[in-house]
Length: 238
Image (cartoon, rainbow, N blue to C red):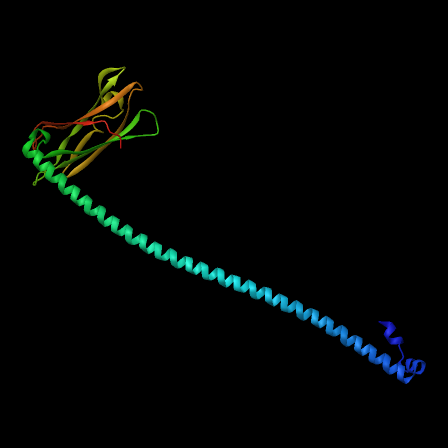
């Protein structure tokens, strides 16, 4: 900036004269004003464009927020409807389960009256389930036993299972003890109201099951006499 210090206005005035010096000074002022105006106008336009971009971005964000809020409200309504439907379904299922239980109780009562061989001292084989596993020929079973006597004592005994089918295209019966590691203790029951006895077994690869025969044996003791309850069911996997 040392060159500015070398400028002497008096010398310029003496060389150019008063009029030319005034014109020169006015030109410099006009150039400075024009340059300042153009620079200011450029920055003004830049700021206006930036503000417009920010405003557009803000409007887009507000629009997205409004859409998200509307989506949240829609999901909340859908969730409330699903919860109400789920509550209704659970109530319906509970009602159906109660009705099913009452029907089974009535059926068991009539079976006891009309077919006493299907019940032993109030003991009833309520349900039998066979479940396949991911391992070939390997199955799980569940047997639900219950008592129907009003004055219940402990029912004690054990169950026995036979699988009826065909082996190498010939009729065959396989006992549970021959295809399972379960012992008599694993198959025993002792209950007052109901009990589930479960276990697993493996069928031979060339055996085709058709039926399952279940026996519930009440062992003789002080409170009960020896009885055997048999039930044969078709082979149906759950």
